[in-house]
Image (tube, rainbow, N blue to C red; front, side, top):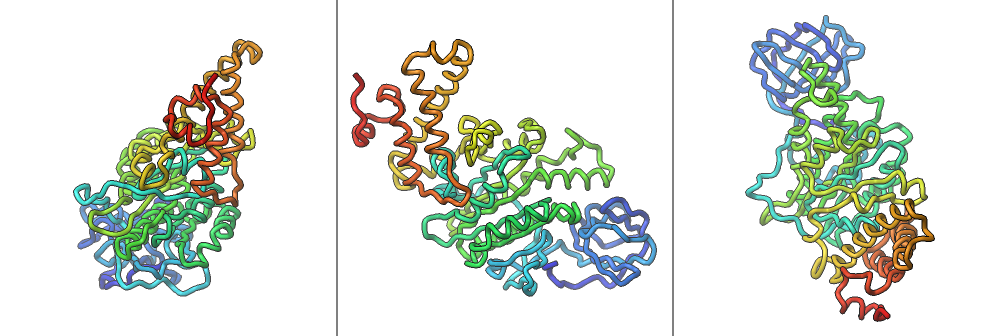
Length: 465
């Protein structure tokens, strides 16, 4: 693990009362506080690491990052640093591939940095926050046009098992840009299969080789408690790259549902009273402690933009993880089973997706003058197309008027001409808007009520008969 060496306590506590899942309960402990980093020495000579979760009247509950498998209550020694877990921070992380605890798995040396930072971190001070503005271009036409990601924003991707959310996350991490300014990506994978981890490494190899990427990979067979540390390390690294070196940093976290399940497992091991669906009652505040670490700081260069990806069990958007995430974040990108079945990639459900900060990052001086109007018209037309489609299911397509049939043709053109793109294709905003204008030509001028007349004239739309 890449951690601060620190001054370890001279006293080793060897009285282990209980091994409970990933937790060790130690008694007769003094001078130890919450979130302190611990080193656990086994009788075999093996050394493991842990974090103090709770201290009460001389009893400490320590979360073992490597898990308690193979441990016995006897012959165990625990030493404490007296301070929370810290890691080195700095540009030395760029280009490195590490496991979920920050230990390099790319064959290189440990990560070193000019300074140390506590992994726990803290949310940005609201008084010091600067309003998010200016876009982050993902290279995904549908996202950049309709749910524009803004620097400093937190915009989650809601998906369900079986949809290509990991493909989308890797593609965004591989091709995102901010228009020539210093930019880096921090990608944290949690609970990945080994096949998925290999896919992520291959998909991001070019960006990693260019020294623009930090990659943290927690696999499904790693201890679940490691997943609680992975996003915190990712955000700690990102914060220093952003506010310490003036970079704009995009942090991709996938899958936050795996993170929440690990939190539930640890909560159950601690014997806490469960809340909704067995998750701890503090799930909201725990997620907020992660999501609120992104943003911009007044009078400081750089920004941290967050793209968390989460899967909704059984497609239930009211499940605690997406439900609480929606309260904390500024919009969402929702992926659709129906569009995936129709062969559309990425299968973004436009009418369920939105970016609440889009207006800050789109339009004159940010993207293009016509961008907000074109986006509004596409969404409006797709909403009308859905209504017409429902009507056609009732009365039949033959009973529809000519204008309504245009909306059905528009939906098909929008899906396959505008939204659909290859998994290795990076599409500029100009290319995406050009495709959007071509798609809108399926409709007549009087059906384009969201577009100013001057834009319609500039693009050669004839007056309606």
